[in-house]
Length: 183
Image 1 (cartoon, rainbow, N blue to C red):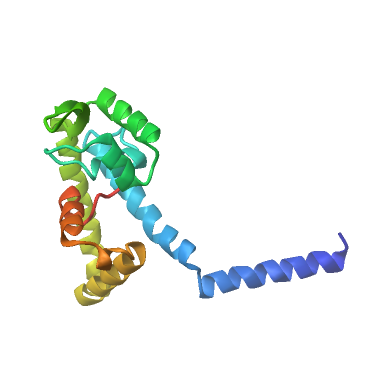
Image 2 (image 1 turned 180 degrees about the horizontal axis):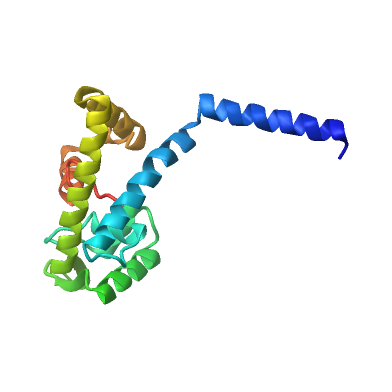
C-alpha cells in the first residue's frame, strides 16, 4: 500500500465514521437501544436469582402462561425449528423453569408450562422491563414514547394490522401487553 492510498483509506474511514455518527442506520440504532436493555435485564435477573437464563430462554418464557403451549406453537411464535425449541425446553426444564404436561386435547402432545420458578422469572422480567420503559418515557416524554412504541410496533409487526382479533388476543395473552414476550 502506498502512502497516498493509506491516507485515502484513512480519510474514507473517517468519513464513514462521521456519517455513522451523524446518521446511523436502523441496525445500529436498534442495537444501541437493545444492547443496554438486554444487559440491564439479564444483570438484574441474575441479581434476583435467575443467573442461568439466556436471551433465547427469555424469548421462550415470554410466550408461556399457565395454560401452556405446545412446542410446535412455540416454534411458530419464535420463528425457530421445532428441534431448537425442543432443546430450549430441555434446558429450561433442567433449570426448573418449565415442565411438560400432557395436553388434555391431544394425548400425543405435551404442553410446556412455567413452574413457580418460571413464573417468578416472568414477573421479575416484566417489572424490570417496565422500569426500563418508564425511564425511557421520562427521558423523552410519555406522549413521544407512546408514539415511538406505536411506530416501532408497526415496523416490527407489519402484519398485526391485518391479523384477526383472535390472533391479536392470543399474542397479547402470550406476553405482557406492555412489554411483549421480552428476551
